[in-house]
Amino acid sequence: MWIALIVINPLAQFSAQNHLPYTDAFAGSSMRALVTGGAGFIGSHLIDRLIGRGDEVVVLDNFSSGHATFLSHHEPSGLLTVVNGDICNPEDVAAAMSLNIDCVFHLAANPDIRLGTRITNTDLNQGTVATYNILEAMRIAGVKQIAFASSSVVYGEDAPLPTPENHGPCMPISLYGASKQAGEGLISSWVGTFGLQAWIFRFANIIGARGTHGVIFDFIHKLKNDPTRLEVLGNGLQEKSYMEVGDCVDAILHVMASTNEPLNLYNLGSHDTASVRRIAEIVVEVTGCHDAKIEYTGGDRGWAGDIPRARLAIEKMLESGFDVSMNSEEAIRHTASVLLEEIGLEETT
Ligand SMILES: NC(=O)c1ccc[n+]([C@@H]2O[C@H](COP(=O)([O-])OP(=O)(O)OC[C@H]3O[C@@H](n4cnc5c(N)ncnc54)[C@H](O)[C@@H]3O)[C@@H](O)[C@H]2O)c1
Figure 1 (cartoon, rainbow, N blue to C red):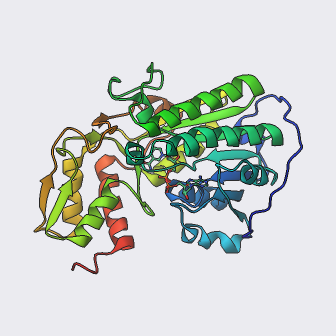
Figure 2 (cartoon, rainbow, N blue to C red; figure 1 turned 45 degrees about the vertical axis):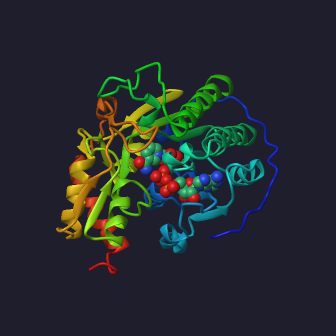
């Protein structure tokens, strides 16, 4: 069911309850999940899994970078409700939260890390303050469980590699990273003060079908505009870990089903890394733009606030019993193929 935004003032008061494991809490019956940012890249894949197993899903999204087409295949199921609203608006959040929600998956955020180099309050408002809005609406409506999409960038650039979850202090170097760290802190405080149960996931670079941003997406668009030349930001030696989006959402649901601490913190990534130089080579190969000259702008990073080398320690995820199906290079090749199909190179070939 697709609905317009209805504003409801939920009056139910939050009351402390014992924590239930995610699986036990919803055992034998499907749950109703609120997915903020559900029309986005990762959110829409998560919803494929949730609806696929029979859960009801409410999406709260303002469609700033999300697309209705990522969700339209679920319309016939009757399990999907879409609230077109903004997480920066407490009334929109309260309206969505009043729809009998069992668990919140909080994914909505500004996805563009680079934006913070030009506009300094976007991450503050759409990250930090918006996460407060979600938590406060949960407290008022009595919703007890949240999963949060955080990021490897909270570790900053001086962390040991691979970086384990217990590394600290975390010193992010981007405004986006600061907002993720602030979101984590707020969630932890709601766990400690109001008895919330939370799963915080620090993602590596997530790639795959329906991607609308990121290095592979950018490279394909650049080659579409000019198949003879591919400009790479930095010296190409930036080295990061890449995780396929299906692996990411499977890991989220697996970890939530197999852990039951009040606060559960997990890195989600793959076993290895790939350089930007290698990604450029793979994209040139997959697109068939073999004459493209790869040119580097120079410098050790793509932009101010970028972290040149990142790799997450994933032992905790592996110990939970989940392993990825693709390494970084396999995920990159797969993503280049599916995005090429989605974007097309019609104008250039
Ligand atoms: N993609 C990655 O590699 C990656 C890595 C680390 C963390 N994350 C985090 O995962 C989450 C999902 O990222 P994604 O890659 O799917 O990005 P995305 O841009 O595809 O999805 C974000 C969604 O949130 C929505 N949104 C943005 N601002 C909103 C607002 N104010 N109100 C309501 N909806 C809003 C957008 O319309 C979009 O549908 C984000 O929190 C992101 O920071 C992503």
